[in-house]
Each structure stands twice: as structure tokens, then as C-alpha cells.
Amino acid sequence: MNADFKDASKSPLKPKDLKTFKGLDFFPFDEDFVVKAKLERTPESEWFKMKTTTDRLSKERVYGILSFQLKGKPFKLKVYQGEENMNTEGLEDYLFLPFLDETNGETTYGGGRYIDLRIPKGDSMEIDFNRAYNPYCVYNDKYSCPIVPRDNYINLKVEAGLKMFEK
Image 1 (cartoon, rainbow, N blue to C red):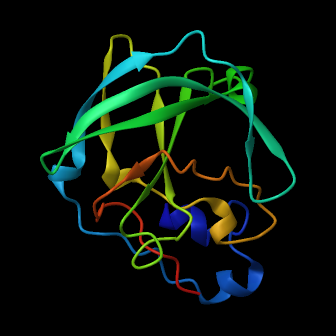
Image 2 (cartoon, rainbow, N blue to C red):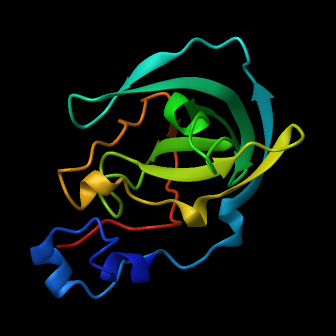
């Protein structure tokens, strides 16, 4: 991820931030934040227009509900599938897990973080919160990022993945 951010042809950073960029700040890897989740698919879910940080609306649907335990507490999060990705080669099985937690606004971006997932063959999947990352709009307002739904909230500190970006 740091290599991509340092590469001007791939980086979401503004040119002025790219000049002084040293690297992204991650929490230390913590295996407690790698969980097995049960996937309850929602094949009849309606398509809707998810709000973003710009005027763009992203056509999404709830692909399913992920149920898991984290730090001994049970949680359920909605995992989303985007219509545009379904029609993009290589992203047909892409799922999007946006979430909020108790670190937002303190050690992580206030608007929440994302995790990329793939549709599993069965009804379980691994969620690795160590892979949580910031939306690109954190780095540059030219990006249009989906706004994390309030009901995808984890009421504990997910001290895993990417920390807040310091310019």
C-alpha cells in the first residue's frame, strides 16, 4: 500500500502531500482482529443509491449480513455489492464492508474505514480488520467515497488496520 501511495501514477495523494509522504501508519498486526463470520445472504435485497462524499450516488445492495464475535462480543454488519463492480471484469465477486468503530475521530478517520472482501463459496468468510483502510477521499477531495452507514457500527475500539492520515 505504501508503494502505491509513493507512486505518483497510482497515488490518491495530492501532489503537495506526495512530496512529503513518508508512509502510512498502521496499528500493529493483531490476530484477535481476524475473525470467522457467518454470511447470511440477502438475495432479495433492493438496489439503492448509497450517498457518497460528493453528489455521486453509488448503486448498491446489501449482499448479506455478516455475524461474528470480536473481543467476546457478537456483531452483525451489512456487506454490500455494487452494481458497477458486478459488471467490471475482475470485480464480479467483489464485496464492500464499510464500518465505524470507537477509534473513529481519535486514532482513525472519523468517517469510518473499509475492508474489501470476495464472495465466498459457502456461508462463512474471514474478516481481517488488519486490512481496514481509509477511503481515498481522506487523501484527496477529488475522490467520491461511499459514506459508511450508521448501522455498520462496532461499539468497541478496532485497533487494527490503517490509522488516521496525518498530512
